[in-house]
Amino acid sequence: MSEIEVGNANAKGEGKRGWFMGHFVGGLISKNNDVEVKFSHHEAGDNSGDQLKRTDSHTLTMLVAGRFACEVGGIEFILEKEGDYVGWGLGVEHSWRALEPSTMLTVRWPSIPEQS
Image (cartoon, rainbow, N blue to C red; front, side, top):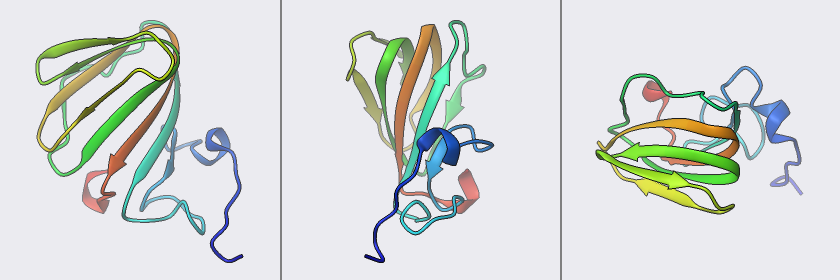
């Protein structure tokens, strides 16, 4: 049973912008270098600000609830049905904004200490 961890993503991600799994998180399973997972809540109008660029990891973000816009590689995608997602690879510029109150699940791999 040494490979079992139970928790709450909201509680575990507190103070880490919602990230509850990755190299920077404590825990038996949640601390690892293979993947980062984020469970985040955004009010309407929240946005990423300037263009973001993640050159060393792949990313997938999925809508749990709400309506959310992601601009990835210069193309805007509107996520509006539960389960809608967009993913991108290394070096792709991206930004986002919540069109209404939204809950998102984001996965990034690998988890690289220099970039969190």
